[in-house]
Image 1 (spheres, rainbow, N blue to C red):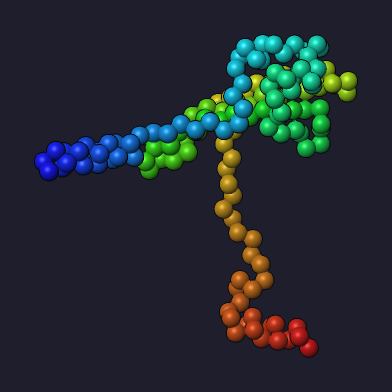
Image 2 (spheres, rainbow, N blue to C red):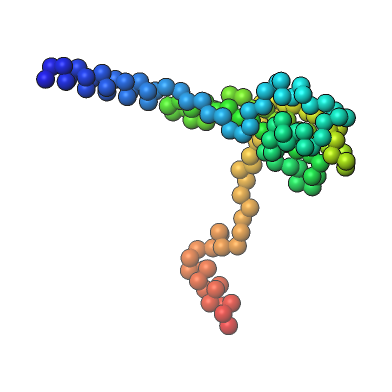
Length: 142
């Protein structure tokens, strides 16, 4: 029985320590530097890119000749979930013949923070009480 208690305590400690461990999660395609070096502006075709990198994460909304590959690495710790550790955005531009014309590589330091606006646009009904709203709705029915 004494050894069983030690085993339970050891198991409990292991579970507690694992709950405190950080977790790294990768989203998107992981593209190595060696893969990028194989891409040659003016020579590499769309088909070559598909073989080398796979399908893009997305394509530009109004430009089928702009392919975007996004990779993010996030770290989660207790009380600090989803902290951005790394982000790489690779934009490839092709000409109408499907040949690579440009390559732009950006990381998380190239991004700009988005400042959200907390103003509220008032709408009809927000300033009226419930009785006022009911009376107004009754008047619309006739």
